[in-house]
Length: 490
RNA sequence: CGGGGUAUAGCGCAGUCCGGCUAGCGCACCUGGUUUGGGACCAGGGGGUCGCAGGUUCGAAUCCUGCUACCCCGACCA
Picture 1 (cartoon, rainbow, N blue to C red):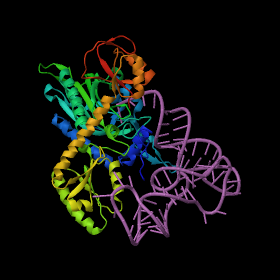
Picture 2 (cartoon, rainbow, N blue to C red):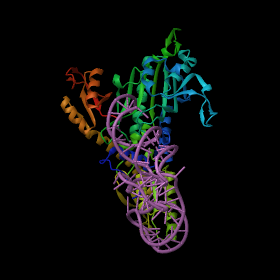
Picture 3 (tube, rainbow, N blue to C red):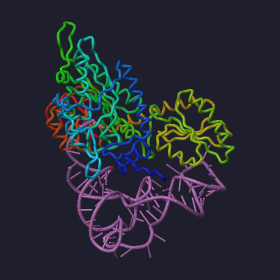
Picture 4 (cartoon, rainbow, N blue to C red):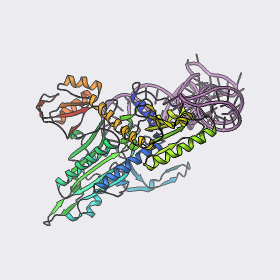
């Protein structure tokens, strides 16, 4: 019992914390608010990156890289943008250290003060639009569809591994378009890419929607998001796509000549998902025994554990296992054979459950006699004994089955934890249980703020898919034509 | 940034209130042997400037002051 997890019912956030550390995904670093992503965690992130990158390229985007540092003057050009990020910026003021003459300690050289301070990017709109000014002159230069994979820094007061760290990894897309319509289409296209990635690869059901003014990105006209529900009933914003209008084009004077030769400001979008998705992945599917990873993102999809007493036995088992491995690899399945002799099988079983490996095979003397292998699936913890003959097809199907089962389970959970309410009392009652709450809202920021102040719940989004329906705002009683989603959020 | 808590071997902890000999325990690690179908057992062994910096004292893990990091609860945010 070397690695006991706190149970979810006992203390959900402790369970999350324990799990991230014990499953070897990440750990806290010596730097406040910054984490070390460990190889196993990074391997999952790399799988996410690879898939997303493929999807971006399939939709016409290319990658580039812009600087980590942003001159302060760039940053302050878009008023609401600065307003939104000012409180959480790390600032570089000097460029050199020196030995203190008296103490001999290393100190910041006061002589080496920068003429203009540099902001460490919390997001890159400003540096990118400053650059785009030189790249865009004609409608023929548009659309410009660029993505970058980068790290950003937001000086958070309170951090949690993956969910909120001072430095995090993400991708940020920044596109420029000739028309408003085209930019809006891009914004929507990307939110669909994100939703498709979340559902088909992370097995995470999400709701696509539009953010209320309060929750909108600083500098955006409209923010779209995908919202997922975690097992503790709290919502997690998992990806955002912004229609920026001409705000940044105007701030950075990015114009183009249209077909008629007339100067116009460019229309913009930006969009991103971050290592926060790792947190979503953990919290959506895992259980008290450890991670549950969807096969499509699991660094190891199948682990094989031999069970033996004598070395001669191991040799026979290994020969059999090698055949299985070859067949699985031919199918493109990632396999690990753990024949280490310093851990007992039981220990290995528990360890791979903790790490969320979707399928485990165990082969021992009994199986050798019968030509079988024991298969255990992580999502349901069910075990069965199957014939080795045709095992590769069986496992291929099993992985698909696990992928969809995990999704269905999360989908069912969300269904069970989604409720419609019509009065403020019902609303407050529903909040105790958590989950998505569909309610009428009068559309004003004042009402949203009051509800937040009284209950801590916020509007997660105005779902893109909705039915028009006559109703009254649960708070103000004013008429409303549609429901929005409220929830407690991360 | 406010309130609360924690910091002792790689990990988890006891010892701290009430200062005292050589700082313990479990897991992990090393050696040898027996084991192996759900976190093995026996025997032996290695590993610590007790978070950091000062102070009080004959003597500090223990008392005092300051600092740092992490966790929980708030305010802020992806």
